[in-house]
Length: 183
Image 1 (tube, rainbow, N blue to C red):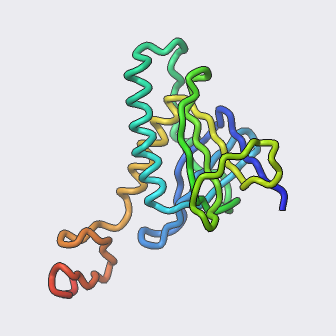
Image 2: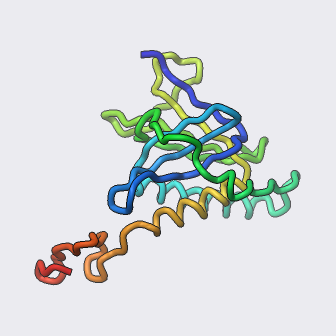
Image 3: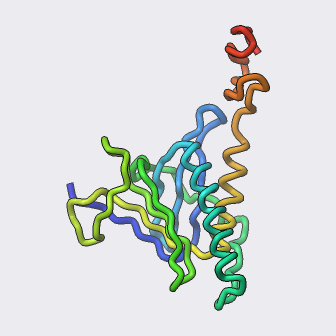
C-alpha cells in the first residue's frame, strides 16, 4: 500500500477531540486547513503525554527566546476550536515525535500508525514504503491552546477512586485497596 502523508503547515485548526461519553471516549488529533481535514485516533494517555511534552517544549523555547522576533499569533476564536464533521480516523497513532523548528518558530508534531515495533520510524517524505504520517506545524499560540484543551479533555473523564486512583464507573468498582469492596 502506498504511503499517505497528511501535512498541515499552519493549520486553521489543530486540537485534541473526543467522541463518546467518559469511560467510552475515543480520542483524536484533529487537523484542518481549508477543506482538508484529517483525524487520527489515539489513547487518552497519548493525549496527556503530548500535552505534557508540549508544555516542556514551550517552556524551553520561552527560556531560549525570551523575545520572539515575530508577533505572537492570536488564538483562533472558540467557535473555530471545534472539529468539523464526523470523526473518521485515518489511522490509530502508535508513535509520535515532537520538535521545535526554530527557523519558522513552529512546534512540529508528527504521528505514525501503530506497528509491531512501537518505534518511531525515520523516513523521507519521498519514501513510498515508509509508514503513513501526520505532520502538523503550529505556532506558539496554537500550541498553548492545544495544551489547555488537552488538559481539559483528560481531566473531564471519570473521577478517580480515592483509594487506588483507577477510574470510577457510575456503578462503582471493586477496589483492591479497600479489600475488594465496591466503592
